[in-house]
Image (tube, rainbow, N blue to C red; front, side, top):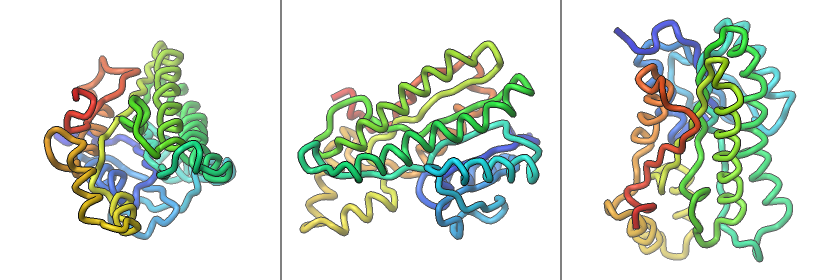
Length: 244
């Protein structure tokens, strides 16, 4: 029997990378899914596609109205939409800092805020946030990104503790470097893409980048009843970075 038969799932950042794989896996396991993205054209077939900028409260409010009208509510929320940056504190601009926090932190906050009423009404719900090992350790030239993902981890724990008594679980996945479209764009901007990729690979003791589906599978586990006693945790999937 499909683990998510009858479950209503909303995924942000569903048009590429980890979010696209999350959407595909939830669909395969019987869920009804809204796949939201700034460009929803690549959201997998079978999901309800919705265009959203998660940093905009108006957009998020419309997204959850659509979830109510289309699915009848939300049982599982995957806050996966996010953007990266590759600057130090010295090089980062205020505009860059604010944009990274608007998407990665404000977007997670807003979607959680709008999902919670549905979950509180039914005394059940699961939230899975996409954070990063960058929010747990120091990485060069990741000032805005690392700080934003550290905030996502802290918010995950706060939500988990406050709403546990209401049957709501909240966890986050913390990937290492993932072979995602964003990393691909990062490599394209490098003076020596092959050398830069080798440097990223070398960070993981397992000697390779993660595949998006590997992170998505962890998120699906955290959303499932198999993880019924798991809340407030950082699920690290980093090829051994933190162990080094």
